[in-house]
Structure formats: C-alpha cells, structure tokens
Amino acid sequence: MKRVVGIGGIFFKCRDPEAINAWYKEHLGFKVNEYGCLWEGRDADNPEERTLLQWAPFPADTDYFEPAKREFMINYRVADLEALLPQLKKEGVEVVGEIQSFPYGKFAHIMDPEGNKIELWEPVNEGLDSELESQS
Image 1 (cartoon, rainbow, N blue to C red):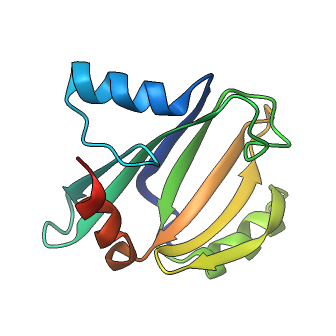
Image 2 (tube, rainbow, N blue to C red; image 1 turned 30 degrees about the horizontal axis):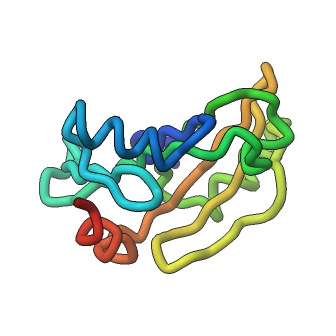
C-alpha cells in the first residue's frame, strides 16, 4: 500500500497572517488568497496527474495544531486515507480525531514520536480549482 505520496501543505503560526500574505506577495511574488498560497505541480511518476501544495500562515493563537505545541504543521498527501489510517493505528501511531471530508478531500491527523501533529490529506484537486482562481 502506498502511504505518503507527496507534501500537501506547509502551515505555520504568525502574529498577522494577512500582513505575512501581503509581504510574501510583494517581495517574493506569491499569488495569495485569504488562506495563503496554493501551488500547482505535477506528479513525477504520473506527469498527467496534477498536485497541489498549500502554504498557509495561521494566527499565532490557533488551536488547529493542538495537541502539538509547535509553531508549524506539515500536511502530507496520501493515496488512500481510509486504508492507511487503520494500518497506522495497528502500528501504534496516535491518531487525533476522526477522518473529515470536504469537497477538496479527506483529512486526518496523527502525532509523531516527538509530539508533532501531522495532517494527512487524500486530495480531490478539482475541489480547489476556485481557490487557485481566487489568488492574485
């Protein structure tokens, strides 16, 4: 079974996400929307398959990264979240919460041995087309 197939997002805490978005847009040329910047790429093993990576600043007081105490969280793309999650549980990996489904994919969270919260994402890229179009 395939497990992680790529990086889906880089999330970090900051004092002012709106100002950070503006700074990265002005100085580094990021195309941004209210969530940050969404990059489109191609899968190296399957060039016809589109991949997406979300870069997102979060407010410093967000509880989205809990129970981790870190300032960042990595999102990894997976091929089959519903098959992978029970396997990880069987291997003793701590699962946080339940699988959540959205138009742009399924999500679950796990903890690594050092207390870092990891987000697993089985994407539905078409659900993010409007996000790509909203970036300026």
